[in-house]
Image (tube, rainbow over the protein chains, first blue to last red):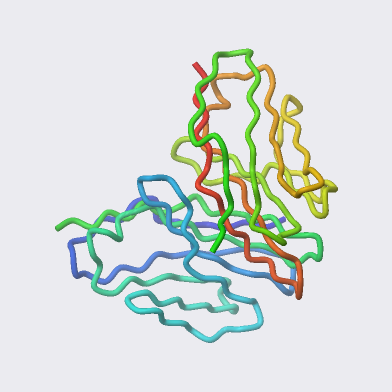
Length: 116
Length: 114
């Protein structure tokens, strides 16, 4: 069975601070995908990144960066110089690889509040 | 670019009524997924369809049923609604060409049962 754990339920920071959201996963599959989604107060799920289990290179996209460490089953997400618009719930998710489509298993989410 | 379309966006029903949620996937996507997100919770997988056949089943109540039609749109039918069915229902679609498993989500249907 797959499981995703986001131990941080809520994080509150002041604008311009850096913040890291933790994600730890469990799976028996040797190949899988990891995702991060952002859910602003409006409710939609905004895709941020997908990472293949074969690719452990860290990735940076603007103020966002991701640290994938297979040895510790972690896929952490860092926002640099946070902004008020970053306030949202962030979900880490895991899927296996199937030819007929793959369900996502989500973590419980981290509510990030960035205060001005 | 076309996205996943869900209708209606908001729905209010009374207990024991029936609701039908619709999902129109991205063109040429062959897989549709349904998720339920209760208040303050993470999305939970309900069911998926690949090429109009059920491909996977999660924690979907027996009161719910779903299908994918020949034009690839999907409908989630919910009967004997309960207060606990109040949630945000997401549809997502993906294309399995070349093993692509990225699911694109619709904006969701917010169902309120009163």
